Image (cartoon, rainbow over all chains, first blue to last red; front, side, top):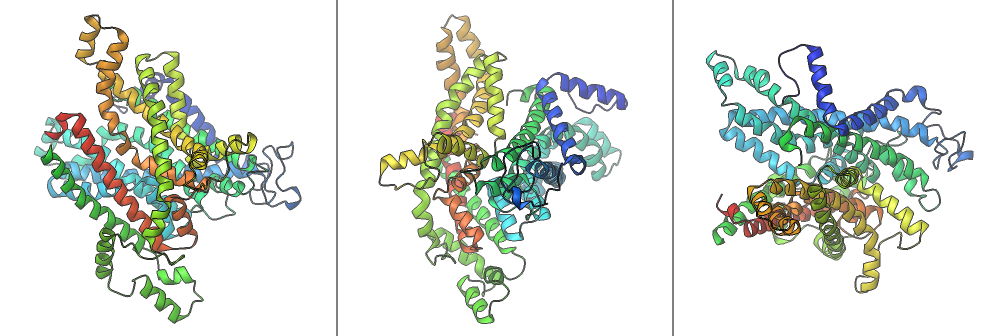
Length: 290
Length: 313
């Protein structure tokens, strides 16, 4: 079934969405976890007990206490506050990079599928080459070359995501483009752009959303990995991967500095994975077990 | 079969060239002068010019490209800016460590992943299925560097069972194994998650087939149906698992090597990054490009071997 049926108003769409969610409890659980993380990120400036970059050298590397719920790092900065602020980076890099990659990839994929012939060979050929390089290595090369900052990090991840969406968008386009109603549109003189945007795109939106959610999980993990390697946003800006990297220097004596931020990465990635997995099961019974 | 092998082999070369070209392009998009990036903006004009010559940047781009491409196929990956040694020599020194790690990781993944996948498929929607699925989803969600850190905290620091730093003497097999256990477990657990999921879906597909129903109907014992009729066919797509998850395997092995400070391609990349050794970074990427194309070729050929239908497509 389609996630967004054409007939019926907003209320109908929402009730459909609820039904899709109800069919698979995993997606509900993922959604709740995700909303929790988003809330923490959005309200970070108000709920953080301390300034995330304020140093307090006298209380460096102190374990969890009433004053610092999750302890402090090697500069005496409050770990909880840094985690809350770090959520903003992780979630925004994760979602923005996937949205960028999804947009570019979908446009290219529909174009390749609809136009066919050399468009198809050229676009998909380039996409296949991009896909041959593992996501982490691709991100690593691009950030290493362009320089580590928020924008380059987002671009690097988007580049690794785009080819996947080109693939996802191309396949259904191939089968839809020969249906009668597309033929009818063409006969009525609709422009190619109108057919692709207005008639083919809505048909693949559901699948794009499902895969988008799964890829945000990967994107959050890649962002954390690159930050851990030292290719993330520059310190002192708090990022989860960067916090683990800094804490790793004192892993023998103060392991918690690395452990706490990791839990939040895990919860966020898991939330997106559960959401995507559940939605996929619910929307497409054929894919239910893949 | 020979025709299939030759056809597939012929397809690999353009793919390899295309991937190498992409690596070349990405490394060349360094904003500004790469020599200055390496030496800093205080460097003298002579030093910059010398480095440019050394890096082969003083010739036209197209010439650089062909030098790079022919070098890649001849095994000449340039010299490391950091150590002055040939990149290929550096790679060859550490390659056994990476090979140990990845093979052990895949073995753990297959040995545990396939039975778990079968179990979840056979007992679909049971508590067992649910628990294993939750764990495999958790496995997919773990960033490899974080699981590595947790393993170190528990097994190296708390229980003192394995070394924190994995830097074995390869000729000492006892040490080689002891240093491999934790990193391989880290990589293996993640592979278990992926392989469990793909085995499950592949088994479910096969269990629905007519011949499985027929076997059941004619009274073949359940275990025989599962192993001989279903699993044997379900295993065919699992052969491609290594090709399919090669990217995951490579990415996670890089992170694992970095956390365990273990010699290997991942450590080479990390050192190249911190020293801005672009020749080394490019060289390691070329090695990865070869590994990717060759492994994909081997999985495809194996697939053709176990499933005769593939060759005729």
